[in-house]
Length: 219
Image (cartoon, rainbow, N blue to C red; front, top):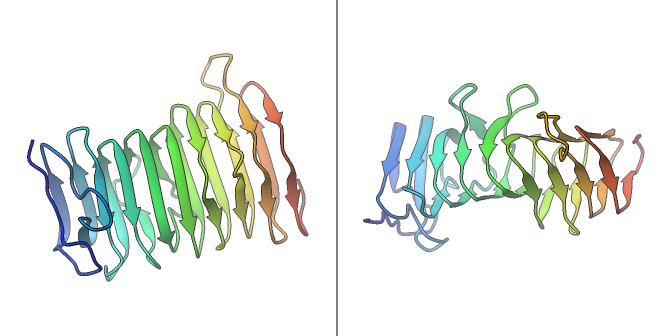
């Protein structure tokens, strides 16, 4: 299929109230060909099981997610909030999701809904709130220097060796979906660098193979 390729950089390639990108191939492939988007209501992208790379660094109001459907998905939103723009519907569908330098991913009361197997994020302000369908591996480079991290999946949920760091509360939950494998597995350090409360919940078991600590809070 045909790809949609951007110029990279921080300029907008597409500016509208609602953006919908549909391709038979990829939609942006890397930082050099990312599609710059700026939408006030929603951004939708369907890459027919191919790569999606979107850049919202120059967006005025952040990155409001409708439905993003591909394989390897990267959302570059430096200093911008990523918000849920399609209510309870899934926002991101793909084998992996990487979010770089965002300033908020979802809200305390409104998660970004995902269906992905691997998640990485770097967040610099506000909360990270992810609600995932299916097994999830929270991969390396996952940290929030803003406030809280909330990751709920159904299920299981694995934190690998690189761990998770946040300035505030950390909630990690593998929801009981009726099977016997709904484990929360902690293979890397989980740390709140402030006075956050860390909550670990497994639908079946909680397996802790690393250090879980809060500098001035509780576990």
